[in-house]
Amino acid sequence: MLAHWAKDFAEKVVLSTEIRHTGWKTILEPANTVAKSLSVTDAKTENGMMTIRVVNADGTNVGLLKTLGPVGNTAPKIRILSDMKSTDVPQPGEALLAIEDAWGINLGASEQSLVKNPRPAACYTYGYNPSLYLRKVAVLLALVDSQTSKGLLQSGAWNAEGVSGTMLEAAAVLRPGTLKVPEAQPNFDFARVSGIKDANFLPGAIRFGNTSGLHQTAREASK
Image (cartoon, rainbow, N blue to C red; front, side):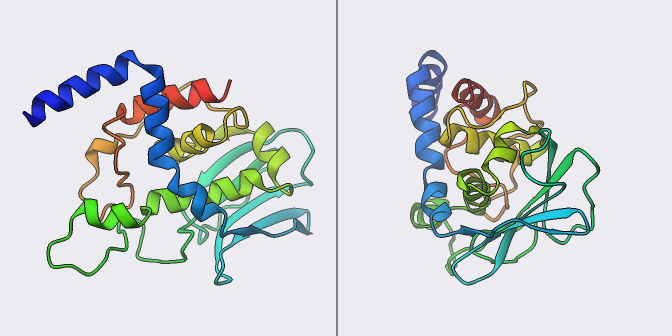
């Protein structure tokens, strides 16, 4: 019976753009709530390097955007980094964007924070708490919404691969018409996450078409 339901719904998602769009917006909506709790600092320039930070309510730095030159110059190529510990320095014409957990919880790149329970279940943990994936998307949304970085992010050419590419697309779905989504689909499969502790676990992603469904929705939203 469950297999029949899954097949029936998958067919409906393929046939209905409205169902797919509504589904992805619903899955990603918690990121909007988290984004509202974040603040973006004014741009600071030192030795030709401009930096913009995203800070949560506890004062923890959860995002960092750095580039050479002021915002408003020629649109840069934007590369997403896995964390702020990276020592990478942006090259001319490039901007680096590091995104971390909006809650400031540092459990490593491959583990989520879960409620204490001897029998963990995704429906309980993520029915009440946004996943780490969504908390990272929230950092990106805060930057997109900020007047400080909005022009740079909206005009830039994104170089986001793997799961970072899906986060860009998630932001594009929630902010229609604001971000340039690359034509190529990110090389990532939500179905391959190892379990509910996986840092890239996104509840509902498979139901609405997996990566290809997100990519298609993002491309349509970005036009």
